[in-house]
Image (cartoon, rainbow, N blue to C red):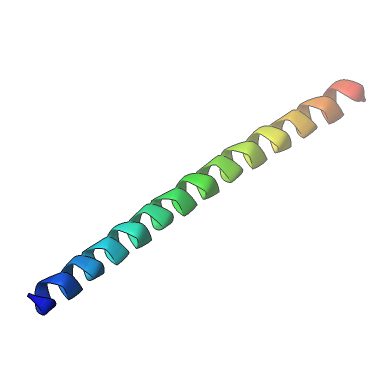
Length: 50
């Protein structure tokens, strides 16, 4: 019985770790997208301004 409860805690911890990893990956992807957009926009402005 005790063993099972430890196992459940492990599973919960794994789920939380998984979720935070997915969230971090999602955030990194969004930041990369934003960076690309900003760079393209900056180049567009520079070429348009000159």
